[in-house]
Image (tube, rainbow, N blue to C red; front, side, top):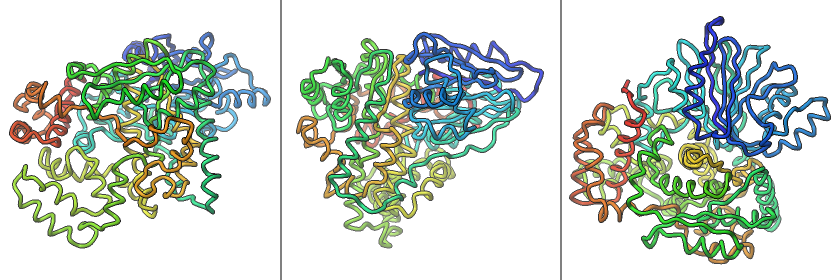
Length: 624
């Protein structure tokens, strides 16, 4: 696990600036405190910071092939590297390390750029082919590991984090208005956008080839949609359950490869309990578990996590989150570089800090909700489809007219508008921080449509899928990498902790996507088949208690302990006005919050507060 970075100038004869490379490395020491390295070749240069997990003695990067013509830097873990090493040695390749990284250069020699299809794991990698003078970039299938890049008149820049990319003088610090609108809409900046103009994220499951400092178009080598379409003859439910358990076991077992101690983030819910159940059986040592909780009832999962920890006899560690921990907001946001609305980033940051006191690697249950239909919004969509809604039966326009006629802040105004929308627009509206019409008001009339355009290809790709699969496919390609995995990567790596997600082992993902929808969501029960498989393998209450999610009691905190929080941060809205956000819109939200204190006001004000503090942390940014 590490942070990678590099530059590729367009002018040969102008060597890559070692000073810039060192600044990029210094910006990501948290991702790799155990060492680092560089490789330069005329106008090209790349490097890494290393968090040593596998092959502690000889796994330093960059790593080259025998002829030293191919060089690679790599962030992540390749879980099938031992099998591939044996195969490559049998084919005559000579290895100088025992690391998973060296597999990459030898596999490239065998297969060229298609070698990424053989990789099982999480990765963002950069491979320099000096013979062809090309740079090859790749990101793992689900987007577990991040990769930013920028194309400039001077050349090409890439890095694991935005804070490294902006160390190049070639990269502008101007805020991208499309990304700003997308953040206001969804609470995160979705791929391929970044908050800075000219900086792009390589989408999950894509590769990119760069020649003479100019990149081609990103190429997809994997996407989940085709597996949702691949329903063949349906085996008996019992047989599918056995196959699911075998894949789960294999996934967790593969993720235990490590030369340093491992632990588990434990909530006491279905997904983290599944990971722990298999790890406790396969690991051979007493498992260390880590849980975060709250004093407020209805949010505190500590009792459930304790019950599961006792069941499996773990070495259990806990921490309470208090309202005062919101003072960490700027520290947490500095780990993200981009505005990030999800308030659960704060407890995730704190549980990562707790875990790092005891282990260097932690396994998480992230991905289970997307794979097995665990979100409440899937149930809501199913119920609304069953009863039929106005947006789907011709009454959409009248309801939208009625909604627009009601004064802002009137109870029911937003709900009427929501019901008026066609199904997928309604789904987008349900997962929005600010609805599209509000984005148009807070920024400009074109903003709402522009921020949704980034999702149009993904929505088009999912057409023809059954209703549930369409939502899951969309979330796997947007919310999972943009929110869930971003949160896990940044908060763990901020503490030099490696986070692993066995639910996103791609053989398991492909199997889950191909399950009949009724085995994912049946008669109001989420994760139907997964829960059947876990019966007797985890405490019964894990399977029967209502889903709680990773909620944070901010409504209680902001109304009782921290009543002036938003006004203290946002002031009169003048700082956000420099980004094009109307000061009057900020004032209106503050007034509505003070007068009515509704949850949606708090969520939207939290988003604006996060935006204000995020861009202040980047420093020196400007709008387009």
